[in-house]
Length: 301
Ligand SMILES: O=C(O)CCC(=O)C(=O)O
Ligand SMILES: [Fe+2]
Picture 1 (tube, rainbow, N blue to C red):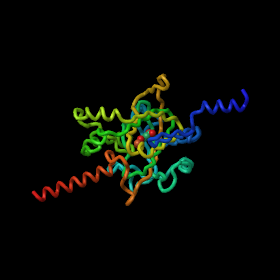
Picture 2 (cartoon, rainbow, N blue to C red):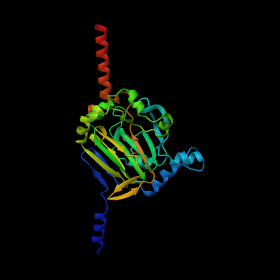
Picture 3 (cartoon, rainbow, N blue to C red):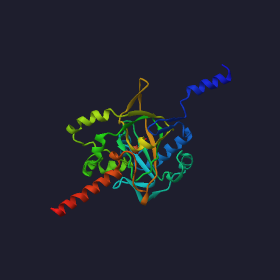
Picture 4 (cartoon, rainbow, N blue to C red):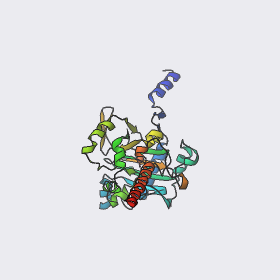
């Protein structure tokens, strides 16, 4: 084959380097090199060695064999009381982040300063959730390493909106126990899974009619969530040990991701997105107005 034709054939066989969808998702393939990927994974395991992943002790073997996500935080740590980031607890970034930060596609004020590295053993996932609107900037990133997994995006519907308005104790009830919470700490507020079944029936049909997309996240790819995909869709990864890829069942090995967010502070806190139904900032406003109305009614009666 002539060289030009061979190059063209090779190019045609390659997946596009950057894929974009109308809902605000962008997937950049091969954002990091295999060498960078290996260095990040070994740094993660170095840090976890005392507690687990060296698998040299019985406790470590148990933890490594469990299906729980493990995580590390860099930059401002996640605060589980606000679902935002700590004002004070800050871990300096590992050196491998320099090159990644320098090449992130969304520049300006919104460069990430809150980072969560997560390890998903085979069989682990993350429940569908919407990352907190009010406390993190629009651009959310997830860098994938290790095993490819499908992430599912589903446009939020009435059921999601109702779940987000459930009293906080329902949210707490759906949270893992304290130990697990520490280990699986994500920087998100998972949607509670305790909404009453009976009254959900109508919403199920409504939600099912909405957009849904499943996207394979190949190792070394960078996913950017903006706009509707960031504010008006849940995202989640099903907890299972195998996936069906092009008709074949493929076993998951371990997957890692680095989620990157920019923390909003002071007057920057809040949200004016187009999805008030699932916007924590709007829900808080509604609740404040409701409480003010209730206390006014009480004082009048
Ligand atoms: O692991 C991922 O790619 C996504 C993680 C995520 O959604 C989160 O931590 O909020
Ligand atoms: Fe998330």
